[in-house]
Image (tube, rainbow, N blue to C red; front, side, top):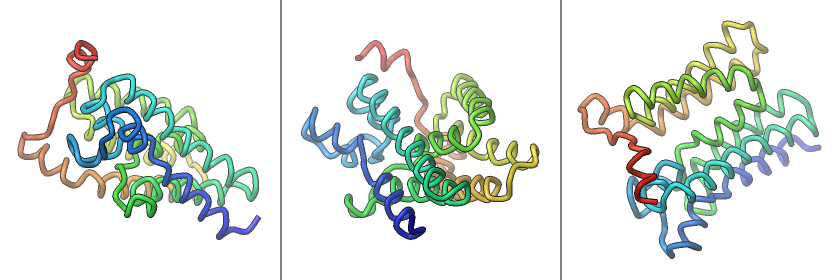
Length: 200
């Protein structure tokens, strides 16, 4: 199948925003105008609750999984990597939502699990530990993607996987640049699952 077509298809897979549609369907709001303004799992949890956040997380994960599967099925591993990356780009900058999307963490996780599930599982556990200790979801997200890249490199993974990890690390850090500033200032929001569960 045509390379350009596959990459465009992966980009539009990423364009599907469950956070946006769930906000419209359940509360008649644009989720990007509430909370942190981000169309992602953490902000959905903040604004709409835990159940909605779980649904958004699963859907965003599936976008990354589907994109990688599509590229691999039709054209092999290099296209799998490119399609995974394009799905994250599509999530972050969706043309259908005027290029205002999420930060790509869950979709990146889906890509990571399809490319190297064992290393992705290790990084997920590390991210959960970071959240438990610091309660910074943003720090856990960035650390998890960066560690996945390091583990791919350390385990002598294919060049295309290493390059994918570098690209995803750059994207997640860029999308969290305001969070990084708030972490250093001590003003970053801390995650409180117990409180969210009590309110749901």
